[in-house]
Length: 169
Image (cartoon, rainbow, N blue to C red; front, side, top):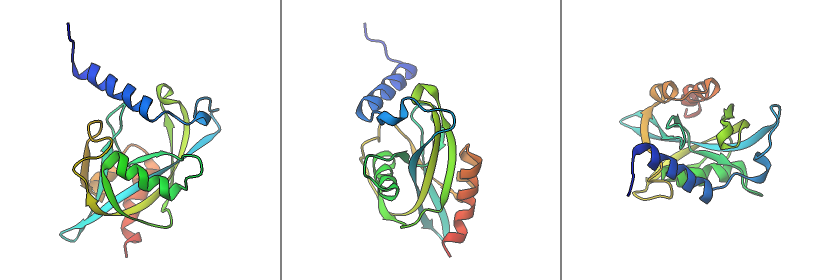
């Protein structure tokens, strides 16, 4: 008997991603005071004069987030952010040499737990791909700066997104 529901398929997607992208060894036992560094891409474009930001859904909770991930051994935060934009959002572009800031968040215990500190790099979208590594696992959506700031949960990230407009001048 074959059983398929949205809950089961979502759980299976999560397992497949965990197997394909295991957490780095240093994230398995994190104290409440340690922060694991991550990097994110704030992917943007101009459409009819307005700035739009590309968000993706997280794997476990389907919340709107920036494409982000752990720093692999020897990978710079900037290169990591660029890689995550490709893997999670299917976008290629020009990534800034400097970050616009960081934001903290707490990772669920089921996903390795602990604190994360995410460094955010703007990335001007040049090409949106039709196929990418996590296409079947995530939804991507272009939003205005205001809508993107309202869609994310982390307060400091909301402020980074809203403050991004002045970085474009």
